[in-house]
Amino acid sequence: MENNQNGNLMTFGEHLEVFRKMLFRIIAFTTCLAVIIFCAKDTTFRLLLAPGDNHFVTYRLIEECLKWLEIDFRFAPYSIQLINTELTSQFMVHMSTSVYLALLLVSPYIIIELYRYIAPALYENERRYSVSVTIAIYLLFILGVLMSYFVLFPFALRFLGTYQVATSVVNQINLDSYISTFVTLTLMMGLVFQLPVLSFFLAKMGILEASFIKQYRRHAFVLIGIVAAVITPPDLFTCFMVMMPMYGLYELSILIVGRVNQTNCSA
Image (cartoon, rainbow, N blue to C red):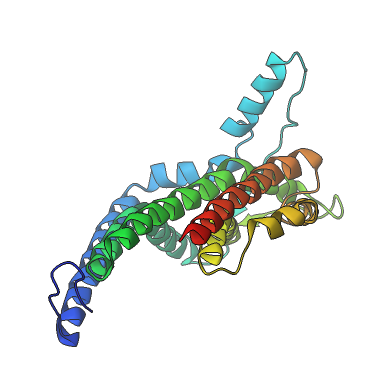
């Protein structure tokens, strides 16, 4: 790899040494944060288990908004019972959750370290847009995680946790199932929110045109509606809450691709 500013060359061994040090810093920082999260067990699981509370902030906010519109609406009370069926399960869930949350919180530092590693090989114009893209990836991922935590997961839990095929079948949700569903949904929404970034790269490569995605806007709206209906409980309100941000990302992608297409043409 060559430094494009001063022409200094690094050997393959030197690159490996730099990469090794970077990897060590990331692992050390993540491990320290995971230990801190592990020790803060009460706070960590109070936040993780909050969406299962009948008085979760999302429910209260929706009720207050409807009250402001003079609509008398209250969510029906519900409760779920979490159980543990294996001797080591709670401890292993505690450890894995601590690592997952540590990786989530330390991700800005990981991005900075990776950028510092590849920056010497980039030209000045590449550095400028790589910084913007990196920030966009992280912010969109966090927005997706927040969308899952405050909207998708609470309503999915409310529906699935109280759904019964017969009154004689009692729902007792395993803690491991709760956490794995939470992690899956948050990662899924974080990745879904990367649509504008994916569109940017496809446009940069000349694969995607703004006119094409504008032409299929209605088809995309229907497809997004189907996806939202699949990943949410079968109620119109939750589907709408998930569908609108996803369609907003599609419209944002149109704007981004249009600007990239103009830049490519002028170049």
